[in-house]
Length: 195
Length: 438
Image (cartoon, rainbow over all chains, first blue to last red; front, side, top):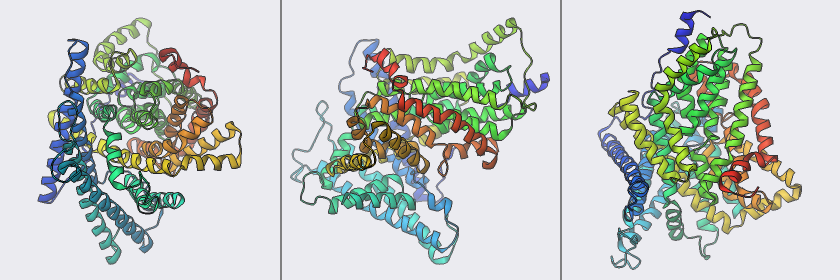
């Protein structure tokens, strides 16, 4: 092997991959995805900093960050469900995709994809409704009067602050699955190419 | 009712309904028709149950490791590691392949995800393989197999999820896959060298004197120290009992941001923002899946699905070895259809009670699941890592398939057999470090 070849092998530059997230084109999607992105970034950074600070305080300064776990769990729910809502827009939710890969283009494939989107939307809407009930239970309490609402033990943080991202996440999942269904219906009835 | 719920689940998965929504569809059937008047079936109880299950600090580690992996992937850290490993084995025929395997193992101990490991190490290694005269089909198959070490060398999200579902120690699960991981590294290296032994197209670097190698080691070692400190901090912190997994993962994020921004300079603030958002999406997708599976597994247990599956296994054979074989085949088949995390969240609540009834240690089962899910990532039709490797390395699936099957037959199947039938391979480290029985 020549020196030049060795040099090439050892000094090949690594190019970082570009962002793989789908870019929003209409103003509403831009506002929604930007909001999701900012909330996710802030929550992720806050989680990393708070947990690291608590670790350093405990092991180095031998102090305790009082009840920090209650805060980070709430922040974590915001991170999880804003990420899930954004994931529905980006088409990142995991699926087996056997139809997409192994069924030939044609009416059957379009019908199967339309069925998939109808089932996806129907089930997500049902769970969004359950999510609303769950949030309302936390917000208004068991009697629906705003009395005796569930709270955390140490900081008395109302638990609906953790239920709310579940509702928002499920709502936007339903919203973006609705658009998937509209696109699939268009493809089914006009004979267009499926995604 | 439970059988219809299973049919709904499988039908949804086959037509391509997202995995968490498929779980919810199966849940919805049981909510409406499973036990209308019985306690535990109502949606008003299931959503709070899912919330309580998810309200766990240990799950935050998944989000943090995903973020740390993303930051490290684009922070130019991998280059320094590869250069360091290259000093030791780069000069032998096929040595570049061994460099790739060991680099994947080291990088896997940071990010714990096969695709991230592949896209990061692969992007650096593939041009080197090409220049070194390697057949690209072989190179892509090798890197696809090696990147799965990210699922065996801890920490990784799959095992955290397994530990969360099964209620066993995350640390014990992490330790259980190290033994099979080391066996895999050895087998992949040996098979790679054996496959290339007569290939005259593969170029071999000029041998360097010990003095030259020492100087190179010192020079590259200095550059690699900040990168190599990360696995040392994470694994040392966890196994030394200094930190919990969640704390180590958060510190990893806080540590790797300045390293990526100011030391290796592979990041800027905009890239960092994008990485965190992408990582959050991945986390969100996993967490919705966990939320839905926590509700579904409760319903399956109320319906005694594990008992029914065990009866089915017993109707075929009562020999524990044969049942273990059937469980492995079932896991491989599931891995052929779904991604690793979906397989874990779907099968663990059903199979773990069976495994415990058979007298198998749950920590041993964690290693079996680890190896099976890794193998599933490269077995078609759903072989995301294999396809990704072909795309990154620029080889067609036909070129990759033959060497990939050779690696599977000579590396992964023996590792799976050893892991399943010789428990000490996976239980040795949990025994030595945590004092667990074996």
